[in-house]
Amino acid sequence: MTSTRTYASRVFPLETMDLPGGTETVLRGGRHLFPLLSRAFAGVRRIGVIGWGPQGRAQALNLRDSLAGTGIEVAVGLRPGSRSAADARAHGFTEEDGTLGDWLAVTADSDLVILLIADAALAAHHQEIFAALKPGAAIGLSHGFLLGHLKETGGEFPQDHPVIAVCPKGMGDSVRRLYEQGAETSGAGINSSFAVHADPDERATDLALGWSVALGSPYTFRTTLASEYLSDIVGERAILLGAVHGLVESLYGRYRLAGDDEVTAYERSCENVTGPIARTISRSGLRAVREGLDAGGRDVFDRAYTAAYAPAREIVAEIYDEVADGTELRSVILAERRLGARPMSRIGASPMWAVAEPAHARRAGRELPIDPFTAGVFVATMTAQIDEFTDRGHPWSEIVNESVIEAVDSLLPYMHARDVAYMVDNCSRTARLGARRWGPRFQAAYEQIAYPAAEHPADQHLLTAFDTHPAHEALAAAAKLRPSVDIAVV
Image (tube, rainbow, N blue to C red; front, side, top):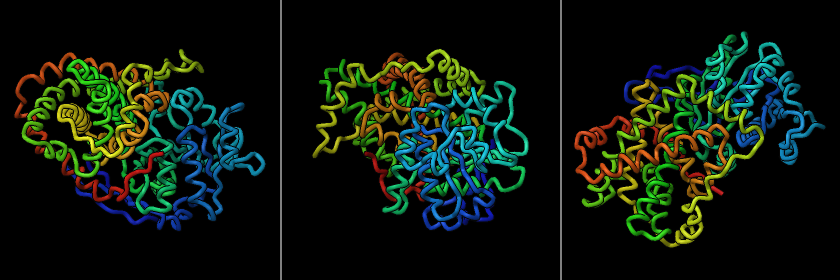
């Protein structure tokens, strides 16, 4: 992996960002670019979106709306007997007009086939889909899981087909909701990464960029398919979801043991992370969390930060190793085979989550202050993931998006509107399995290692490293391209 991500486009105007270690090219999106989509999708008569989960629904709708009037048709392909067919019809995709059909039939008649079925299903059925492709059709992905599976099993993508990825840095519901918000408010949307894995006819870059623009991405940065699945799968098991679950559960228990009532403990743990801490990082950066505290609060933050950093970093490194060597991907596929169609048990029944409703009811008219201990643990975990990705060679645009921006501008606001347990219980199967596996590991590390260590003075070397961290420079550069509006959460 390299820290420099520069590329050219024949269609779109590009910008550069100066980031630690190199310059990266990015595409600033916007509806003013929609007239260029016909050129970006040159040679594409029909786009087949395979799957109707949250990403499938959002991407099919956004593409259809953005490409209206271009003559490019968007069709949805579903497996026989899919329970999603009724919802697809309700959104205007029908068998009668040819925009809804059997997944293999839609694949066979599409020039760009976007594969948005569940990861385990894609691992099981990709060969059938590959066999149905028309000559030269482009394969589109929004996750690198399939590449990891092919590496693990010795498979490969079919020859003479472009293979591209556009990966929104947020949930499918947010991809659609913010696209709709962007119709009224300039700059609304979910950032995306893109990758070109195979480019036999040298059109893949603009095809991927057009796809990202059509989804409503405020800006698009380049990665590789391998880098994307490593950072994405690790991130959702760490700071994006798994670590957040373990962190707030551990803090809630700590504050209850210290004598807080249930609602106060919930506010100091879950509400703090998803509310004031996330908002502060989003608007002002990581250092601002500490800088906004008084002297006593900074001491508490410092002790919590330096106590939590090493245990969190150890787990992030372990997750990364298990994703990189295929262990984590195999566990997802094995779990899918074991569970089948059976529903997974829910974590939202634990005593903590019964407190969500009364805690949410106390929000009106109150500005919850940042809890310094909670902030120290959370920022330490976020920084630990940043450092692990840096040492593994990921580019800075990917690091700050996967470790910070996606968390504070997409997932945490959604968790604030619902709660963390709701997110864990309603996310993708891959993310849900990962959060349930690794969340308790983070919880145990905080309770058994970090919190006892926080009783001792802070490690000044770790604090200096945080204060001078290149992530602050990278976030400041990325902030210049950040949408000027807060995301809509309903």
